[in-house]
Image (cartoon, rainbow, N blue to C red):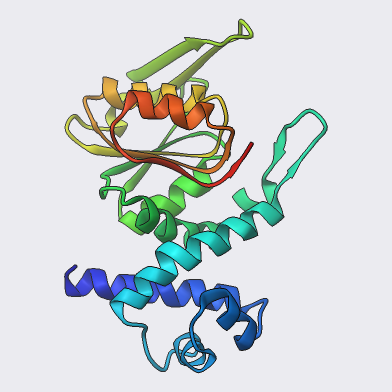
Length: 237
């Protein structure tokens, strides 16, 4: 880890701790993190930065568990099992915290492009792209009028409905590294289409990440297509 990477990790750890502190006392935060309340006070108030090892623990360990719990508290399921995640995908500051935690937890290679699907994946895609200093691209279910060339991926679902995504051909260059992200992974059909777009562009897949996995079918399906890391911040049966 070079000096810049270390500084970025330390600042990310402070950002996570400050967010957790918004709803907790220092004693409560100490119980969650296992760190002394006095040290937490100094980190949160900017008097000192945590060391690299402690920062990594906060971002990749404590941060992931706590943000996953926060995520679970914000989403709901209706009687038919549909997920209401509007309390998450509309909260950009929360997603900005998720990005470094996801990057640290799943050890994604730094991508050139973060690829997602319109529309719910866009805010997460923007957060991940900002963290990695990468471009963000999102595939749509319809063609944009002024664009002449598209990468197209099509699949007939079990229900008989045909699902098609289009991405402007210039959005990803051959040889670039692409991280596929989405707010939700259930069957894995959307992720399979996004991975197919990346592969059609002759890009390298850096990983697949979702905020929420419902069951393991989707993550298993993605893992069959790529050897890159595949994961979700939280999982539901």
